[in-house]
Length: 189
Picture (tube, rainbow, N blue to C red):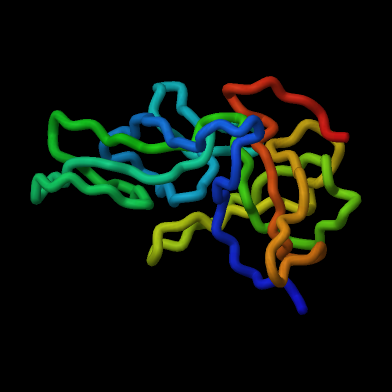
């Protein structure tokens, strides 16, 4: 049976050394004109605020959600996505929660082609696709076209052992962020 094509971005699985998986706070600029979806790989901008990720950069981690005070109602909101241009109550901060530990592994779908046992240990870039705005989750995928032994953003650890998941198109694999701002980087094998 073929693997289901259901990208959900980067879903935390485990910590390589047995540590706790937890998200840490970063700030989003009030009115920031971009979307962040739960499971998106993100980076920091030169201004210190959370920013979108580009494959040519290192990542700070994976976006989990956002907390802010609504400009109109004054209610504190926690959402799994940050919608472009959202404005918050004056004098308050927008707190983004990010899985930023470089030792966290993630489940991600391998997109645009097939992945095989021979790709274990290799590195790849991220397919930076738009998120699911209805449910607030990412649709980022591993970019199969970039699999190599070079030094790319993601490192493939293994095929995830789950029902109806085999090597091939749309396989779910376990990865680490190889090009992480808080870790030492290395080339693939």
